[in-house]
Image 1 (cartoon, rainbow, N blue to C red):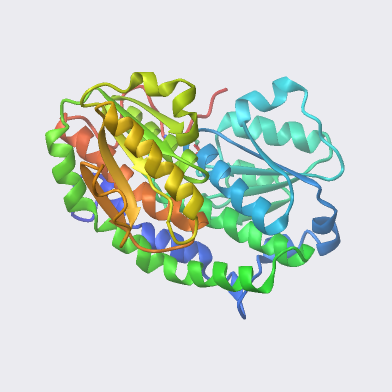
Image 2 (cartoon, rainbow, N blue to C red):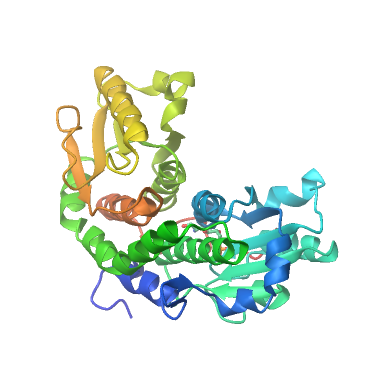
Length: 369
Ligand code: M6R
């Protein structure tokens, strides 16, 4: 049931406030994050961790990349993110202090399952972030931290992605608390950001009308670039993946700082570029660097579509379109910024007359290696 929407993807985009809210529910107790499934692993075990490897594919891997920033910041554990299908082939260094976190909406992705099994065979503790109750990966893992996004039908992942980021943040906050690395003020501000999140996600969903108009003039676009810095970088990768997947448009995401190391050569007159602009309040240095990037690409003819926090007027002289999202902390920006990018892919797919929910050549769950 599409609930009155023209596609499951559209319905699932609008369900994101609940996906986030339901993933948080019951896991914040007296202003602190507590995930019972992690508590069961034993606090001593959690204190021994000296390295985390996140494994996932596709959109889940971008959630993993975003989660890595938060876990490192709050729990002060080095985190690396590896694509599941690359993991085994590099003879990974796995020690007693390694924790492997897999991220998978379906819990059945064969590449990810094989990586989890590889780690289990070598005695590594495994945690599964999964959206599907009792799927294979969470059953095989030592602990399962479920996302509660509800069933996701569209091949293009949307609500599962925001729920995955949320779950990884909760894991970071839990680990930070148990390990004593999470300062009281950092915990308070993260919990406040989590509290505000469902309503803010709903506001970001309301960018639909603006994005639909934007997509209208861009129906013939053959290439779109996405730029971001810090957590905006994996968000840019996700925006590009959505567009490839359902609108069959060539798209690439870049770390904004990488522009001058090559990609800026792609910028030609009229090239559309989405830029994820970090908050000037919480990340002033990154903000000013991204604004400089906007000036550089604009000077070379780019059509700039800037996603900024409300009240940030710094890009107005250089951006062709400005999309505004609510104010939050830097780490939480991807959960809001990604939503207009999801709408954009959906609207371009629709404008091209494509099947939004069932893109060619793709399956919802990839159960072969
Ligand atoms: O079920 P999983 O989360 O393990 O799936 C991983 C990827 O196949 C998946 O995220 C894929 O990239 C989506 N179609 C993206 O929209």
